[in-house]
Image (cartoon, rainbow, N blue to C red):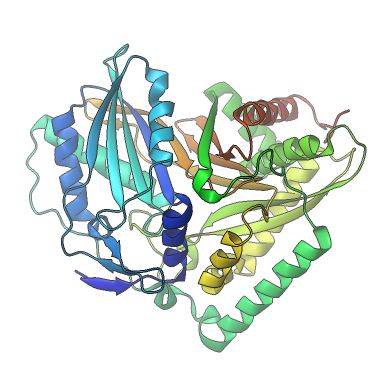
Length: 443
């Protein structure tokens, strides 16, 4: 096991965000039906800590000399919360989003939430440092936890937990086409193209209702979900329109943002959408989802929304731009060129935002049933206090449903505004599944 390892550029960025702006928390929420107990979950956490080496890391050092260390780490911090109603899971999540990770002690903590109005269900809530995880590995972590809970509850012996192998550095995993001089040239080309697109489109953003320094901002959360019937309808509509779920979600969010930015004025609006991308399949060798690491990047798409822009035209444009970026290997170039200068520049301009919309969309391809436990829902939330002016969403497709969490920098954007924006997104999706063409910006 590695005793000490220097953080790479991406890991450094998330630790800086953690220390300066409390914006490195990745929170995953599983709603579980069945007789889960505090003791079962405590044992499962110990087992999963043995399986995943990164759960034994902590971060030490000053901002210019950050290192992972394993020495002196204790058990995963764990607390039990009882509240009257099941929908109060969102209150617990808000607490987790806005409590800074004490990275000098642990990079994970867990909450067991038990609603008093329904003892047949409970919620497992984990908060991880974004420097050691992405959404894919987070979802698999919950699968591991529930698998261990099943074995513990059934009395099945659990012997010799085998730790997953420690991943090589990102530089070693990059394909040959992006290593060395060639990779640097591709990275520089990526930066140049990104800068030119920003200058050409000058995408608008939601702006700031209130401007405050990072330390006075908090992450807010608005939750929505699409039931099985409508989710299937959306899937069918995307197939018929030669679009993707990602494209449809991006289109709904960009149209919503553009209508808000327009404020009733008739004009074209330039917008951008930042889509997170899992790069595991682009690496050599391919990295499995159960390997805990921060292996997500992003692809940006740029669009001009006119008064006659249709929903499905926009969704197809998103799809085309994302596919083109993947073919060029753009997500890997972005990871390769990540640097402390980027985050330092961001922190020195707290009231600027690069994207109109940012969306993380994951499909949770894990089992629903674990013995006497049934996984009913999975929700994703990410701390976003630092990202004022951005329309931000974490979306999970699980068990035939789509769970949407819109998180935002409060009071940069008010909760009332975000509630209205969330409702608008759902309305655009509903309209898109009912009409062949949906006006982009109705007056």
